[in-house]
Image (cartoon, rainbow, N blue to C red; front, top):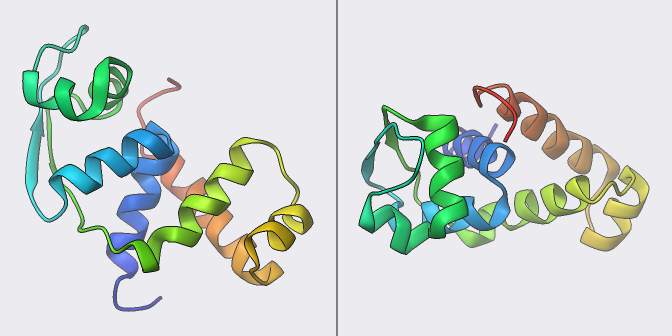
Length: 127
């Protein structure tokens, strides 16, 4: 893995457990910072609600409530392929279709999908 491999894996966790839109808002808003996620059944933290919206805050609390997260910094050039592959994966595209649409090799698509699969195990349950 490259130098940014740890951050890559962390963002993969957020993409798989929270969805692409919420993960990008989380990393874009708090990248490089530490964030405590309160445990609650209904999101009430005004900063989290404002940044992620109700559904995003609810997903964050479901997966990471009562935890302190170190949010990786977002480097769009590095993570763009992860987000694109995750989008196609969520919509049921085959590796061949994803490869063609994203412009990556089959091995790179499979590598990114494997990272997303490993990351999904970190969420405490289905959303």
